[in-house]
Length: 165
Image 1 (cartoon, rainbow, N blue to C red):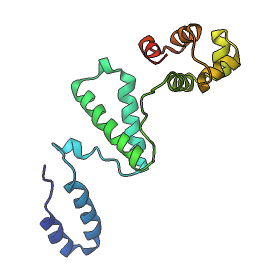
Image 2 (cartoon, rainbow, N blue to C red):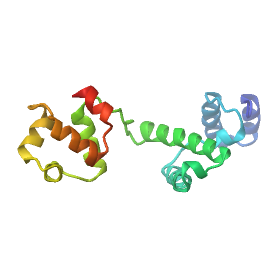
Image 3 (cartoon, rainbow, N blue to C red):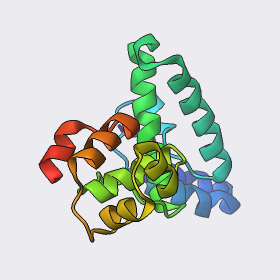
Image 4 (cartoon, helix red, strand yellow):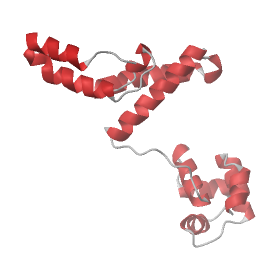
């Protein structure tokens, strides 16, 4: 989608030279974009304020629940999510979360999500703290009691646990 040509920017800047550098920067950004319509143009986040405003919209949509969103809202949520992720990676330096590849990684992730410590996990599973520590540090193989426990308590997929045990 062509929004404006460089020639128009140059013509405008002849009358308004103070606007040239900002318009040229905007032109360079838009030239690299592949927008299909004007709604997609608004999906680039350029400041912390825009990021926070976008996150409010994302949270509002998410709080409705996916099943309650219209097709237009689903598309909007998808576009906003891409813009947010790009801003978080490019500007805030946050890395995208990679899926866990081991039992230790998934248990640590689930502990974080549940705001639970290894000690609390051991207590809930009825296991010794040292045993849980040894399993999560790789010094000891997880046994059936541990695997069944983390499956039930932390809701870890049984298939994942069997595949990585």
